[in-house]
Length: 339
Length: 192
Image (cartoon, rainbow over all chains, first blue to last red; front, side, top):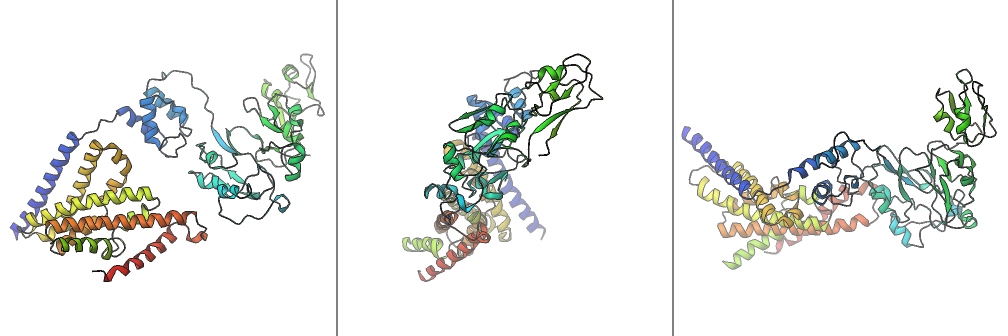
């Protein structure tokens, strides 16, 4: 009995020992030298393997960063903290350097089309896939730029950030969106753009057709009328090819264009009934410093004499918010207009 | 002799297909059959490991366990052999053929826990095969696995783009497909 136990233990022990010895020998003999920098970089990568950088996964991206000197920003998902850590690791920046303010982007669906039979050429019953639908008469919608609404972007999103909402239009959850750009490539109409998450005013159209043509096929499409351009105090909108474009570098999100857009193409995020804003000065706190009077581009502030309390001319104020931002006493409030 | 080896091979590939007839190794069969490319990689890796494991396990059984009357240690020692072998093969491939290593990727370590590999090793012993027969049977088992995986991947690639009821999308239709495939493979039972 004892012999059996001992022999069993011995056999398995010896087998294990032999294999262990072979493996430890092999691990030395067949060792592949991996640059420790690559491993450390890989630890700092997001690890989502989304492919947003164009490399097959985070490991390949880490290797490219270390070996080929690809900039760390190529990864659209990496957090600014980890990006700095990688840059410090590779000696690209010193720990004390001024940090660039990171811009977090999210996907923006540039279409606001309504879901009405009036705007459809036919009822599409084929494969539920935007690429397939485009092949058939350029899709079921009259507007050639209308979002197909069949959810190729939803399927392409590795983070579950896109869902199909009302009017067969995709809705982006900005908290989940990492701006990897997979949806941009999946959209056959190329109506998705990556835009700074902080920005709230967007042109929800991408139709470059002439105004009358757009109007025929859509109730909310941009007709290139240029009213927004005139109303923008910051020179942030221009109309090109019958389509308004917002320069997000300049846009402050005041919503003056949103209030005036006749087609309701330009929208304010999360405020469907936005009618513009107006500045209101809290008289008791105002010290009459004249700063608001000087910054206002529309001569909508009363005053100009020092120590005299300011007031806003409601009819002239477009609600750009410049005075509220500059006021040293922070006594100017921006109020949404009721109607 | 040759005829009997061919017979063993045909039986292992078609009649006693490890996946579709003996229902072994279902994890990779469902998990890695989304694309034909990865199915091919996984199938080749499994075939390779099966042949190696079959031969080494047969040697361990014949030269170590039987003389010492320790046959009851079969399972545990075979698992030891397979685990060590997979590790070893992974290291060798990583060093000598980085391209192949990239292609096989995560599949190699996964094979350690593939029950079809252990099944082949145990069945070789159960059927009293010699060394050559064991090798052929293992090779046949691996080839059968490769076949099943590729057929499955081909069908699933087409199912992916076809219009299915929501409830059937993904795994459910994969299981139904696997069942139909297994039924179809039962047709080979009268072959030898």
